[in-house]
Image: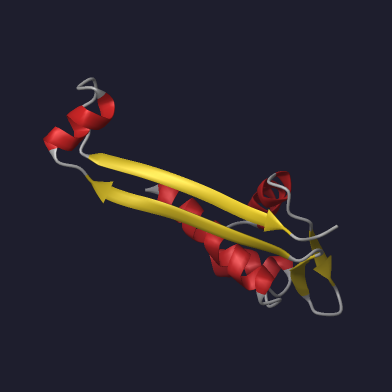
Length: 109
């Protein structure tokens, strides 16, 4: 379930950046159980989504440079066979359905 871990990491990164308490990149990577390089992959992903993320030496934390709101949400739903047929037209008989949503609103000029 690496997919779920990735979503949970993004949620935690987002929360800690909003609260301006990520610590150094090394500390945050250790907290997430990933390498420093992998942390920067996550940060770049968020930047690619339109977020302006910078590291503040004064705060010793990553920060959002502009006021933005981000909500990273995912839904885990177990479907009955009749629901699977309705959703997929009967072509796919998996019993799990994952949906991921990444929302952000920019209020930075």
